[in-house]
Length: 334
Image (cartoon, rainbow, N blue to C red; front, side):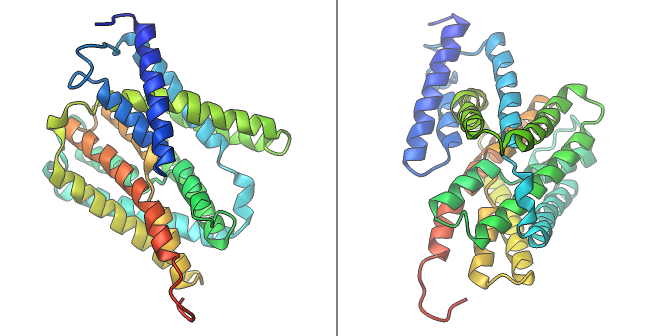
């Protein structure tokens, strides 16, 4: 069994990069492969032969996560908000608020059903669950819009504007929730600094944009999310009923909110459904928040497992849903 922490980190990173690339080739989010790499190196599978967990890996993963959030903020193009701002703001507010309220109400009413274990107050537990279901993942969403060919359309501009605004609101709420924990302000600070730096250099250097995108998706994300995957190795924590419940709450809340507000803002029916399903992608951003909550002891292993699966499922659902919605259906259908 290997005990060198540096070799362990490199082995995990290479596996995450390879499986993340394979996932993209299969038109799936790269985070799916990165998490799978962590699962494969967990004690349940290869961990007894190839030891990767170490204090060095924990530290490296934390700073990789901060870097990932910095570059995620960098990709939030605030200058693009001027396009379809009013519709984007309406969709973003509803798209965050409705899933948040539903999840919060369910967690407060039935805490035991969601794995509440009294390590934090019921109200804080409910707020955290609401935040986890409210956020959308801009990187996954952007890739999905590009894959289905609507990135530069009205669907793309509304969805991107809504998601950027939604991300800002959710991270502000997350920061307020952890106001007493300076350690967990660091991810919020990294995200905000990334936004500021992104706006400064965006118009000056295409090379910088490409480099930062490579660092985020190819260098930092594989390490962070593979370490999250290590925590998923204990399959005994998988709760199918809880996972299905979270998927139902997350999907219904986000899709209905996005679709209705887009439709009420004047968008055609089909385009409105596309906005709703595109925003349903939780992806890496939700997994990052879930990981932080788990480290703080706010959520149980069972809920952590289910939230990660929920984030993956909603991300994998968006692309096929948009392709199905956008299929030609004959003249006159709106």
